Amino acid sequence: MKDLFDSCQFGEFRLNSRIVRTGLWESQKEKSGNLTPEIYNRYENIAASGVGLIITEVYSLYPKDVFSKFTNTVNYTRFVREARDLTDLVHVYDVPIFAQLGFVQFNKKAEHNVKIEDLTIEDIRKIQTDFIIAAQKFDYAGFDGIQIALGNYYFLTRFINPYFNKREDKYGGNTFNRLRIVLEIIKVIKANTNLHINCRLNAFDIQKGGMTIEDTVEVAKILEKYGVDSLQITRPRSPQYFSRENYQKSLLANACNSIIENVDIPVIMGGGIKTKKQINNVLNKTKVDFISMQRPFVADPSFLIDWQMEEEGETICKTCNNCYWKKTSTCFINRAPELNINYSSE
Ligand code: SF4
Image 1: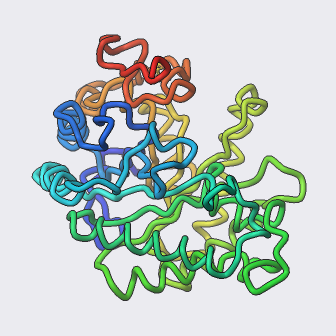
Image 2 (image 1 turned 120 degrees about the vertical axis):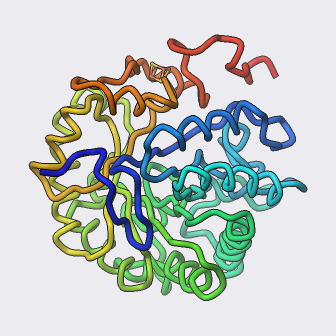
């Protein structure tokens, strides 16, 4: 029998449990990007809770990206020193930490949100170079790994998807060509850093003509072949699908099973599970060994401490989704309101 609090192997890391904390928005940084004491406290609470692996809130590759003011940045002077303090703090608890990196729109001078088919080869080289520079900074800062955002609605998610990528050169067409931009990034990161490389992928698509579960399996196999060390599989976010959440969860578990059967690297199943019992059910009724959680850590960064004592652990998150829509790293129901920074008045 598997249990969520099993000590277990994840690639080269020994984890304290099968739970992966994943992050999304960062609302407690300073405007300049500097980390605040609240952020260090939050990470220490998460690391001390019994979590297996921490994946950070998103680091936005570009400071003027559409959601960059709600995310972390690598583009400020003291980044490496501050991030090193953060990773040192997490490592005290024997917890590895990966930096999640992505961007949504590619902007070029006056041209905003350049379409995938309009990117020049120079644009592709710029994106790749920026990823590699950010990865080098993460390595200097003591992160154990990098998570490349190929899931949800990020730019590279669309780039690898036939619904969005209509290019006719070597960066479009078949699955390998659509992945080429990512494979080239991975090759250079592997050669120049010690980072574990994780890719976050959507399990399936919400667009007709987009990626099926079979396509995602093919993508996973290619990523593994070209050096990716682990995967996180998530559901694409779309309001029209929230009402079909249970249906999606079973599709997600099926997709994870299919991927796990076809690769030899660790696969994390993403999100939406609320109780200890549900997690242990998934662990024991599927091939899934690792589960990621986001909102439960927003509602209470230390909830896993209680779960270790309780028979019936259940998150206090009400899934109201205010933290998602209002883009905060703090909870609107379970935290003091003064901890939430109000960006709407800026
Ligand atoms: S704001 Fe809502 S969804 Fe977010 S953690 Fe709190 S209760 Fe959960």
